[in-house]
Image (cartoon, rainbow, N blue to C red; front, top):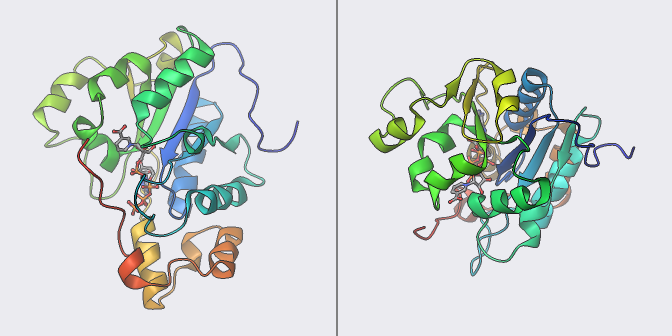
Length: 237
Ligand SMILES: Nc1ncnc2c1ncn2[C@@H]1O[C@H](COP(=O)(O)OP(=O)(O)OP(=O)(O)O)[C@@H](O)[C@H]1O
Ligand SMILES: O=C(O)c1ccc[n+]([C@@H]2O[C@H](COP(=O)([O-])O)[C@@H](O)[C@H]2O)c1
């Protein structure tokens, strides 16, 4: 098999998709992907989101972000890059991606989205968010500053009632609708901090894989503080 190509779909193994902007991919992303792979005994498809339409991306282009992911997964067992969202027009809504995956894999296949806790607590702002639970499980990685135990928005807390599962094996028993908390060591890295450090001339290389650091330098990414300090403003959903 070609290294890091899509692994074969075996039995009712959970299909795990890890979406993100990955601007750039960093060691925190990789640590979470490895922890999910090892805990759920499943391959992880890292899925870069497309560039927002009608505006320039704040840092790297979608192609550059995907190329950095390609470099990051070299030699990583059962981590691969899935470019499906880059092939679609418009915003990368997760519900559209999940409906596409359902059509591909069928109604019975267990499918999960891997997300960080900061993304997960904002779920009620996602497009057609309640429908996401009909199409996928969630694997939620803890993240510094985003406690999952307190102050969840009431509509999210209500939607999560009865969905938490203590065992990763439970995700194989249903196609969608369960939530599993990944208790990996907390990862401090953030792409915003990396972009800001590069623009400010501060140390950043130790937060990304060596090959990704080389790519960032070769392409002169993230050097302009004003353009690259933060993620793109998003239009209302
Ligand atoms: N250090 C981390 N710990 C836990 N989850 C993380 C971490 N970094 C990123 N994630 C999660 O990975 C997914 C993709 O993240 P993303 O590409 O936006 O990186 P980011 O570091 O959060 O970027 P930015 O700082 O630009 O918002 C999101 O679900 C996010 O919550
Ligand atoms: O579908 C949505 O409305 C939606 C809103 C916010 C985030 N997401 C997805 O969540 C993942 C993490 O997003 P981000 O912005 O933290 O990189 C990525 O796959 C996004 O496409 C999806």
